[in-house]
Image (cartoon, rainbow, N blue to C red; front, side):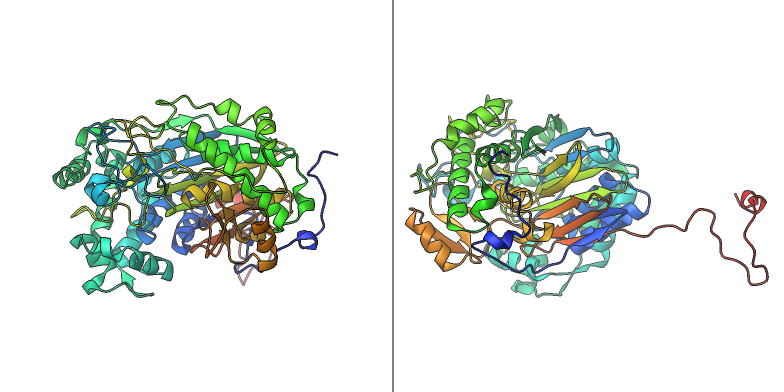
Amino acid sequence: MKRGTTLMANWRALAGTTFDCEKTSVTASKGMVVTNHPLASAAAVEMLTMGGNAIDATIAALFTLNVVEPMMVGLFGGGTALIRLTSGQVVALDALSTAPAAARPDSYKPVSDTWPGYMDVEGRSNAVGASSVAVPGALLGWCEALERFGRLDLDTVLQPAIRHATRGFAASEYLCMSARIVASDLAKDPAISAIFLPNGMPLKVGERIRLPELAETLRIIALDGARALHGGDLGRRCAEYLSSKGSFLSVSDLERYKTIEREPVRGDYRGLEIIGPPPPCSGGVHVVQMLNIVEEFDVAKLGFGTSESIHLLAEVIKIAASDRRASTADPDFFDVPLERLSSKAYADERRAEISMESARAHKPIAVGNDSANTTHVTIADADGNVVSSTQTINSLFGARLIIPGTGIIPNNYMYLFDPHPGQPLSLEPGKRITSTQSPLVVLKDGTPRYALGLPGGPRLYPSAFQAVVNLIDHRMTLQEAVEAPRIWTQGQELEVERAFGEDVLADVRAKGHNIAQIAHVAGGMCAIEFNEDGSTTGASCWRADGTPVGIGGGYARSGTVFWADYERREPSANDQSSNQ
């Protein structure tokens, strides 16, 4: 038996850390939806019950999230979708943002050549305002996915988003706290502050938010599709306004933008196939890399949340972070050694560097300002289509402005490019941003076993990795796996969530780790488990407004009708044919 295959009836028996789940999972037989807002989950279910598939449901959810989770996602953002079709084909659709043609490697003036201020520039011009806006890809990606793989039309899937933008929705605590955190930036833009800082005051939980200008923009898109932004009047208005405020973005940038269908990254871990997005997303390759490294350890026997398992995961995460910084970028601009990074042989080399007795010193890594403020949806339909998609406008509320008359909050994706020339992530015209997005699909014997993803910036892909370990090694339930406390490091301090006990952490410190206890690592995970009986289980975690919704039941049994009071007999074949 290969090392790492200890079978456990209950992971708690060997755990150094235990916890109680705050949310509950849902199991259903006819489809499963998990998004980071209940109204987005409801929109997705609405599509499935109308006869749509998982792709229709995903796009409806994303448009709705644009309305109800506006600090995280929008049609002027970017993202990645991993789509597993009933046929078994897996499509990785790259709709990540690109640098405008007018951008140059020295467009910004860095304030530091060392961590932690390495990515910051004078005036925060790569982070806030029109000068931080990159070419968006989200809308085009959503529309293309719908057209290629969906069953419903664009107008239909847009209706829930239009409805909530028009009639309004209640602000959640999650949204209100997000607005409060960046209130000083929001206050600088009259259009965005009028909505999220009404009368100069932070939003209150439950306060009704209406977005009529965004509703009208969505109606335009329902008629004209993505060309409204990429070649139409809407795009012209957006580009002209942003340019007048100092943006590099032009109308021609919007017209030239293209999505890219890429070949997914594939690996195997303890007999299961792991599928993720390829570069410029670093999540897929480095999740596979980390799993390859830990595969030769008996992770289950180490126990969840023990000092030994925390130490091992931390050392593995450091290795992946180092390789990500050196090797993962837009493959059109940088030769990414994809096969080597994801190979078992390379994992053997890197595993040899790990000592289970002490932490290895790693130089702190400045690895970009990957958005911790993102969203994710994971959706499966009854026919076997599965979508795991991560989308973002980068920072909270993106560029922290609204384009007047449109309701659009643009991205601040320029914050992800290295402002220092000559580096793998340096700013170049047309270059795609590098992201840690890690939508994953896990197969067993060729059929789906799990699908998951989450927001979280540089903490994202190690969190997805930990969830896979929780499921496969520790044999946690899906709900336990998504809510389990997490860790993260890039070579500086080791961030650990507060659920880990002091006794365990004392032993981790003794191994040489500088520990920082924090409220949470990364964001709300959305996951689906595919059960042997054909049902699916959905789970979300406490780190966001995540809500799983499943579909059971359905239409009446074929041939069943309601008998009239005056005639209680089985309907005949003639009765049935006459009603057709």
